[in-house]
Image 1 (spheres, rainbow, N blue to C red):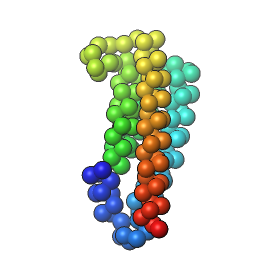
Image 2: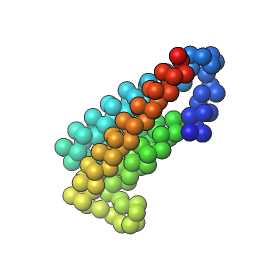
Image 3: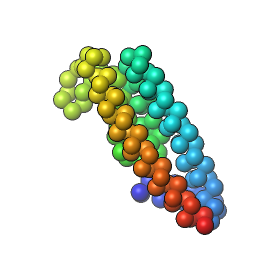
Length: 127
């Protein structure tokens, strides 16, 4: 919430929140596209792409303070690099891919919750 408040401070016009709303809308588009790309990479068993896309969306989510999505994407990044950060051990693709699938589903649920909250916040704030 603190990061989101800092982003709101960037708005020149406090009533429309045009700048921050633009950032949030761009994030929505980016997240949906990235989730689709991750799903395709899972089908192709492309762990390198999954790691890269996880890293990318982790950064975007962190920028807006969307913590649960950031954390899930960090896990996807690590699993895509064939590394289990929780155990500190290397993984094979056969072990990593099911883990990525599960975490991706969690990320999409968390994203949906964040999207709903943000859309409602802007609806209320803009009247």
